Length: 557
Image 1 (cartoon, rainbow, N blue to C red):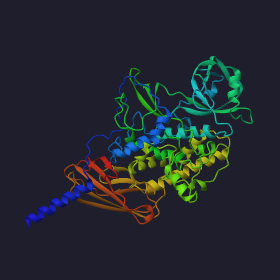
Image 2 (cartoon, one colour):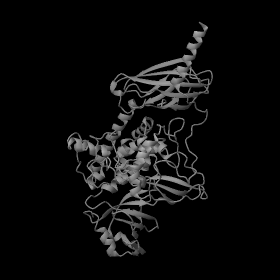
Image 3 (tube, rainbow, N blue to C red):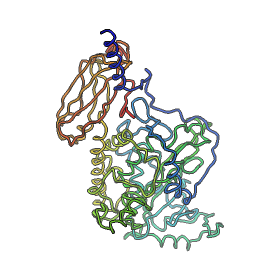
Image 4 (cartoon, rainbow, N blue to C red):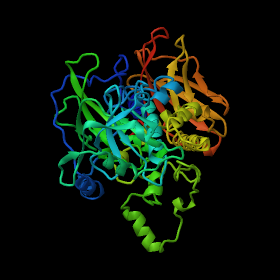
């Protein structure tokens, strides 16, 4: 009998350990900022050409990755609370505090617009691309790039770029300082050394005739004024876009493979929110910058850039009717069309055009967060798992309507109806994202102990944002550091109107390490079912010294 009891006890212990998994956290402060600003020697600048990049993205590297048979791996740069710490890649803005509407309107700059410092001296025509653009300096000497909408598409790209740039900045990314401006022809003068580049790459003097020829290629308003986008130059030495996988070999601070950084993987959901289809290496930038606190220190800072191909722009400008639903060379979609002779359900054909000045094919009725596809395959997006998607959805849902409106107002639409439409559409797409992703992972967040240490409290995001249809039941049970049950259990019920839940009379493990499993069940099957519990790790053996030191979502691989 003693032998059988021992076997049962061992099996029970093993099963319990499987419940809580092998992960244990150190009893220390949660990392909120990564030390990746150490002095770095000047790295080498490198610009990859488009053709090799596209061949890799669509064909070569996709095939070799398939042959390598990589295992699924969780994001590698999250802290003990499953959040992304501040770094040279990302800063917790809306995730960490309330960002004011005025901050969002201002964006990453200091609010000093060059519109106040005219005339502008045109120094050079923009090099590269087919769109019109000038390198310009205002009367204070501040230099910037002046970019225009394509002729016949007024307010499209200039508005979209600034709106999405403000949203990405608020989310926490490094972005250029962009804004929409208007000006008259007499506000532009030629700099003494103004130049253009001829087809052979030689610099030639820039004349008023050249300037007028360029301006003839853009729209002019009914009031005789031009509309453009001011884009400030990113400080430091520009190194080119960051690689979609691996790390920079010449940057000792770059230690997490880019495809395993949560903020890059989860950007798939951010781009889906704004229908940003132009996702590729060339729309990112690394810059070797000077530390603002110590000019003797330099390090690499990482940026997202060029958001103009968002909010349905390409469907207007390039007649890409499938924008956001398929890549520019989507074998699956092409094969489906051939087999069905073009018949069958193609969601983009059900979209409605808003017919508003400055607004393209941007809508929320047909929008499906799961179906969004950028124009080019972007490898890190294929690795986004449920924990990454939940983190991104949390950030998107933190935007209030007032904050979204502040970003849209930065786009300076000439018609108020356009501002209202884009704001409303972003809110509706936001809620679709939250509704989907808060049903994929147990959506308990803000996990903390009460002031007396006797209650474990949390927020139910499905309830907080009004997505729950029925009542919810929350269950908790505790394990010690070995994974053995301590015997403490608790249960709480909440209606769809209550968002904060507390599990009372928490009993800590005597060994000073307690693992609490939190699970939720819903009375309405539309609210999700069979979601994996959250594991909350606590240190301390008494209520006075208890503290949350870590949590694990989706803890089973």
